[in-house]
Length: 234
Length: 234
Image (cartoon, rainbow over all chains, first blue to last red; front, side):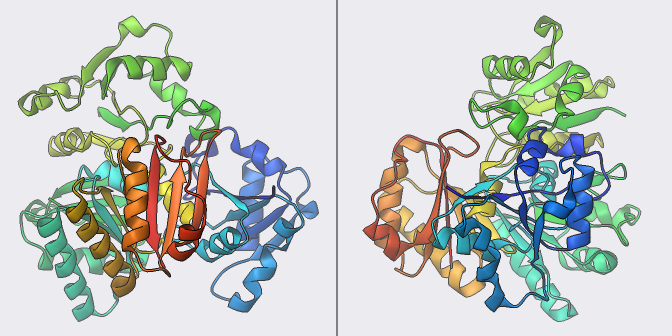
């Protein structure tokens, strides 16, 4: 039966061997049809994995904010013809804080087999490294941009930390990280714990977890334009 | 500076190369001090990775339900002496649906570097494969055992699916999976989507996502004593 592989991608220019299973290249070598977030980035990734000898033999469908929803169903046409397909985004795990879920849903609808492969997820790595409750946590995606709505969301998340023991992870567009960091320090209670995890899996990885009171006294972390995950907890 | 590595473990007897980065054995070879959930399982895992020539040279601390909380601080003594340490559980990623967060917290408190490594997490794999909203999701751990409390929790989760577009993942002790499955089919609305993901990364992997109405008409999945993750969403 045709299989849709969900293929994780490195979170930047790190060593492929440190974040992807060694069995992945073999799967890539046997897959000729891909649904990708960005064609150029996907081709570069496949080359970096050393998995593909002839990129011109491959078929690519692009799935991103420009994709017409009505077109999606045609993307899995190779599955209908019995071919293996790979779904991958620009970084991380497809479908988690990332496009791709719509394709997975279509595949399930037509009862194709969906196989998720192991690889780097900044959300999961941040939760592991936060030292906060990993038995109960929420990932909230991007917080609202407007200051009032953002503050309200931070307060809602902080309530769930205490009322439900539910750790709260979230992200921000990198150039707004410092604004968000500032809002967290102003909004949260001093004893609430905040983990900042930036540049995960890269040479420049930075992970620090302490209370808001401690953060207020510490130097501002250098996360101005770095991809980062934030976790609040007790 | 001393480093605490968070080391993922296979989710059963699968091929190590298909779920762990090839760079992991080298990290294990350089690490002589471990905090583990179960000594025997940890030694078997290290052997399976082909990473360790002489297990007798290694130091192990056991962290599980029998561990005295007052003792925890002594477990990171090797870090204080400048040694690298590895934290691992019986399966999956330490700290996520797993013990280990307390040790990570202690390491942060004394400002040791914490490095989370990439590996299999049944929660993350289930979210990827569910086709449900991965931009906003919660992992709820184990549901309450008592029927009334379980039903109330299922209803609360279902409310958040619709009110907040937040997908809801959770687990159950394998021998109670079918009871939980039955409760889900009785409690949830027909149009709510349910993903059942069992034996992830193993030969016998089973992943199916469809609406509750469709599940009600389908054969009961064979998840009686299999480790499974459930995801509810729209």
